Image 1 (tube, rainbow, N blue to C red):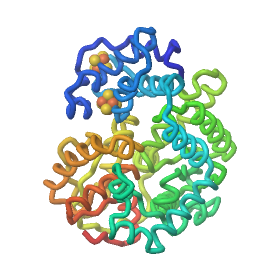
Image 2: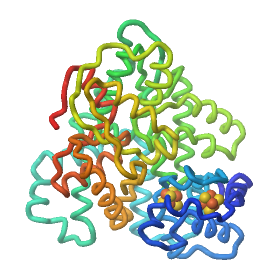
Image 3: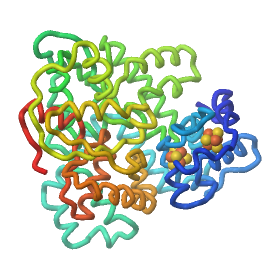
Image 4: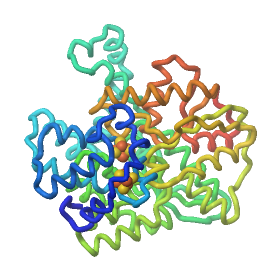
Length: 435
Ligand code: SF4
Ligand code: SF4
C-alpha cells in the first residue's frame, strides 16, 4: 500500500503522540532517541508524505533501525497499525533513494531473483550444503578466513543456519492422509528458509496434523510468503508472490492454511493490506487470510475446541522457557495457544521469562543488516533466559530459533532450542529431548 494512500494516511493521523508506546519499543529503549521510537518514526513518515522532508540516508537509517516487531501496536490505545505505516514508508524510500551499487545488486539478487523461485532457492541450498558438509566451513572457521574479508563477515558466517539434508519440498509427498478418519483438509505453508533449513520442523508439523485427522496438502507450486520483501521495501515483488500464493492455495481447496513460522503467518494474514489497491484482489485476499492459522492456533482453537487433540501424549520431564515471537504475539495476537499446547504435554514444566515478548533481535534479516543492535537485543534476551534454569527454549519462529541458538552458543549455555510443535511431535512419538 502506498504511503500517500488514504488508508495509510488515516493510520498516521490516528497517532495522538501520547508516548504510551515508547517504553515498549526495543530500539527506543536501547538508543533513547525520539526518531528511533514509534512516535518519532510516524512523525517522520507524516513529514515525508507531506513533502516537508526528503529522503536522506539519516531518514532511511531511522526507518530501517525499526525491527518491525509491532510491540508498539500491542500497547497503542489509538489502535495505530504501525506495521502498515513503516512498511509503506520503506517502500516509498526504496523508490526515491539513491542506491549503492552493491546494495542494489544484493537486494535484486536475493529478494527478486532467488527467494521468490523455489528451484533457485534449492540451488542456493545445494551450494550452502556443500560448503557446510565438505569441510570448507570448518576450514573457514578454524583459520578465521571470513575475518580477512572485513566487516562483520565472520559473525555473519557463524549465523548461517545449518541446511537440511533435503528440503521438505522434496521429502514430503503432495498429499499426506489423515490417521483414523478425516476431520480437516489443510494446506501447509512450506516457507523459504523453513523449507531448506528446518525441513524437520515441516515434517514434524505434518505428522502432528495427520495424527489429528488432517489431510495435509503440500501445494508444491507455492512460493515464499513475501515477508522478506515487504520488510525491505520491495512491495511490488511481494505483491506478485502474494497473487501467486492466493491462486495456488485457492485451487488446493484447503479448509485452512497452516503456518509454523510466525513471520510468515503474519504476512499471509495481511495479504488484504498488501493487495489493497485492487478491490477484487483485496476481497479474495481477505477471504484467504481468514483461513490462515498458526499451527498452535489451529491445534488449540480448532482441533482441541472441537473434539480435542487425538492420540496419546507421552511425558517430557523437561523445564521449558517459552519465548514469544514478535510476529506471533504482536503481529497475530497469539500468546496463549502455544503455551496451552506445551502444557498439554505430560510432565513438561513451562516457565515464563521476563520480557518474553521483547524482540530477540532476529527480525527477518535485521541481524544481518543491523548486526550491532541485533546483538544488544540478543544479549538482553539471553540474560533473562539464563536465569530460568530451563534446558529447553521453545520459540515458534525459525528466525528466532536461529538467533537464540546463536545466543546459546555464544554463552555456552546447556540449552536446546525447539519449536513447540517439535516438542508435541516428540511427545506423540515417546521421545524426550536430551536437556
Ligand atoms: S501509543 Fe499510539 S497514539 Fe500513542 S504515540 Fe504511540 S503510536 Fe501514537
Ligand atoms: S515495530 Fe518495534 S522497533 Fe519498530 S517502532 Fe514499533 S516497537 Fe519500536
